[in-house]
Amino acid sequence: MTDLLLAEELLLIALDDDSGANHAQVTLDAGLAGAVLLDLVAARAVRVEGDKIDAEPGQRPSHPLLSDALDAIAADSNPRTVEHWVNALPRRLKPFKRRVADGLVDRGVLSPERRKALGVFPTTRYVAADAAPERDVRARLTSALLDGGDAGERTALLVALLAPTDLIRRVVPRERRREAKARATEIADRGPVGEAVDEAIQSVQAAAVASVVAAASASAAAGAGS
Image (cartoon, one colour):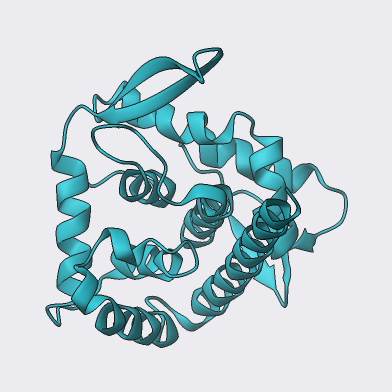
């Protein structure tokens, strides 16, 4: 399946196949938002100038999630920072994770299971229904991170999101994580596409990292306080 969004690929890596548990914890929303922005950059539907992002007139992606994200960006009267949108998109496109998951459910890749957290609060988890798409994503990542394979554009963009969301550990064996992280940095620094798009990608990645660190720090502080 070659038409997955980056956010959909990232979600497949983050979710446990059997239980649907989220292994990215507090970093997932920022990672998914970064992935949506990277898809918009790659589609040239937005432009990034410095640390600001704005809609590119006349460009409209066909995917409804990307289209709605573009509308949110375009509706702002002044260009906002990339970091602003990494944090704002999950709120603007609620329920964000479910909207990313819905496309995978529609194509039979994930199956929703409705449960009650603590036996009281209704919640939905997404478990694997068709393992082939995730298997293909993992094979691309393994080739790029461990086997010396050439990372194409899509794989390089996904790799750029794995480290800040702490998901490399979900892709490679424990004993090879340091090697994979070094390779991920090399791929991200090299840049997968043209220079202008590459600069935009670096801005989005930096914003995702900042947002992930802030979310993790806030979570740790809340845990310490309790």
